[in-house]
Length: 374
Picture 1 (tube, one colour):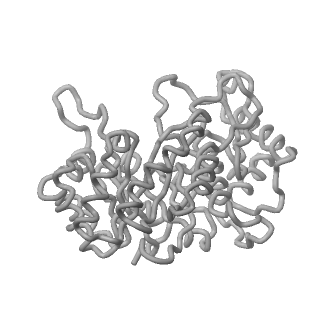
Picture 2 (cartoon, rainbow, N blue to C red; picture 1 turned 60 degrees about the horizontal axis):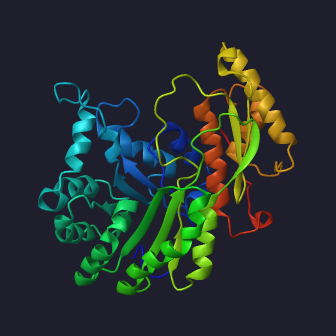
């Protein structure tokens, strides 16, 4: 049973179905993918006209025989209809149908039933459909995940859901408390977060629970060299120490933001981030991005940044991950190095996933002998 007894996964990151994030997890060593259970909200893959390319891209990243948690990306539909109320591509209508709550979210169940490695997330928009939805999803035999956002938690929906789960006598259930975007001021609320999780645990003893959020900065303007604490890890550690009775697993956004950055067109200034266990270090090109006119200008800027990263005290020359090797290639101005923000993001997420996966294991004891081959 997926969420009963010994849990084989150390880390449950919430990842967007985007090129950078799929590339980041795809390039992890295979033995590490066995220890990660990613949650990926379903949406259209890049410019696809249908959902046909979405699940295959997830399976390409993690492997066709590995489980993953499937949710629905409601934000994918925001502002997509034209003035006539029509969607530009079929894929938007397909996602809208998945969100249809009729008959216990039948469309969502049917979609999941055709993807045998997808562990379902119960949809909470229509709470009246939850009992029938939970019963339907549980027949898939993969366990069921319930993901609460801040509004759910503030409204005590998590307690209501736990009562329904108890009434239905379901045991193979995993609860994720997703606090989305946070900052260092949220650390003081760790006890409140733990108490909310305790309410569920009191109703469903030994329930597997994740506390998830992200504190990756929304902007870097005005900074060219610095560090940011990984607040989500600090919050989790405090909850884990204080609420030892909770059956916790670590979750975050893989060092991506929970909020989209809107407006401010143009390409961001070149920046390379280097994740550590408890903070992110970053070095940013401090000249105006409009000075980088050609692709060669940007390659040169990223090469300079990569050399600075590799000379920094935090650089780990013995860490042979895809992400660190791409930084090395960048310093040499190689073709497969970083030359755009998306590849820089993939590098950061790749290293971050690895570091958080092995957070409780001294790095000296980790085998990184799987050489990267592009």
